[in-house]
Length: 431
Image (cartoon, rainbow, N blue to C red; front, side, top):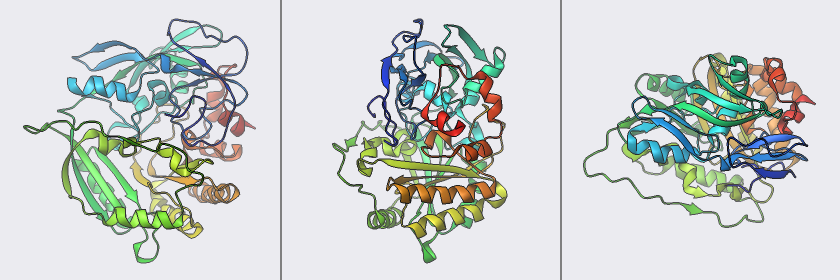
């Protein structure tokens, strides 16, 4: 995990006071200064940073409170990690209903960013499965929020980037599963047209769908990638769960290891690597491939990286994603793990929830200063023209005008923000 007070992208840098929280019944430990909850630091930009202010470090709120083995309703403190819930729930035949690309996020952080996963077409976002939570405000008041009680505060807090107060505990509805195994299918696609056809076909029969796309490819290879779809599977006879195998990046190299040459080599090898089209695998490598590499964010060097995740409407998805990838390929930048998925049309769980109908593309870019920032501005031009949006949890440089364009309901959020709470992201987009 990152050191408390940094984000996973390690950009931008921020100086703030770290104040730990240990007991959900305690009052807020600070009476002066600007506040922001901070879980496990897996947001990529500055939505989890509060430069010049105070971070309320909630990982100490790490206790399970109650679990109903008949209904699957789990109540836990907000600092509990998804990994801890999975360790508890999977042996009992339960699973988290929505999972992002890492299991090292806290429940409070997952609510604040209304995280999504590979099954948006079936389950929507994490916020749709949150039944209730307690919100601690800076004036000392505590509000239980649900779809029946304090409803406006409930929808403002889901996807609300930690600005409405500190979530102390939450109640989440888990889902039944037959075991820890996944039946997966991997299909190569040669272009974006094939990707969208595979996605539409897979939504009928598969709960989880995701694609890796070669963002460094050009010419006849442009738009190629791997489509991986999966369903939960029963545990096969005599099959043991694999042990935890994690390698780590022990130090930050002086320069980024991600460059044009290494990207092209990695992507070519990854695309052509022999693999079974059908496989039975444990859930961890399917849902969290990068979690096997501890501190993988260090490979980008001391300047860190910027992630860019957008969603563009279905009507122009193929042409818009094509234009985005062409721009990226021509720039010489790229991502060694570029992810492409499709969101379906579902009512948003929160005021600032990111997912909406369309294709979503997520990429990591080494921070090369002005050149990288300029590229992301040009990608913004394409997304704005298409009527799309950018994910705040992944952003470190979005301009206020564009944020307000992407999230036209932002003004409905403002009355629910705690007057003592703020973040680097919020100050930037409200400037």
